Image 1 (tube, rainbow, N blue to C red):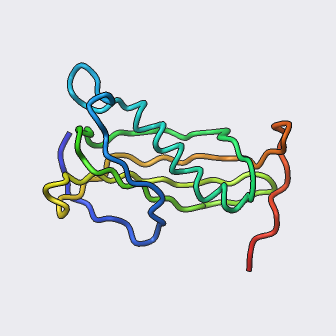
Image 2: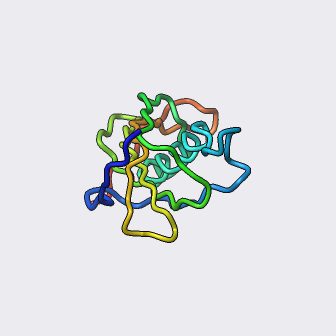
Length: 134
């Protein structure tokens, strides 16, 4: 995988920053893709949870393509943007960027995914989203 420089986005909201630890790596020393995917799900839920003003559930994840490996000690930044709002669901684009802690100027895009969340009631059934705040 080639390391092409990137810039942190200005058109999305920073919703999560995390540093992977040694317990998050595979036998090759790279951070597990599944660990990154779990962090993307957490990050992707931030804006829909605010918008839904209550419980939400992940109902779909579009493809993940990992462009760069993630290493222990990298600072991962997760940026999100709601790209569609339906009656009870919201679709969110999440982009993940990596920066070595010793070189914040080196920014690499790790992955991007589109996730869909649905607002649910106490029984886990879909519920309408409240009106958007003005």
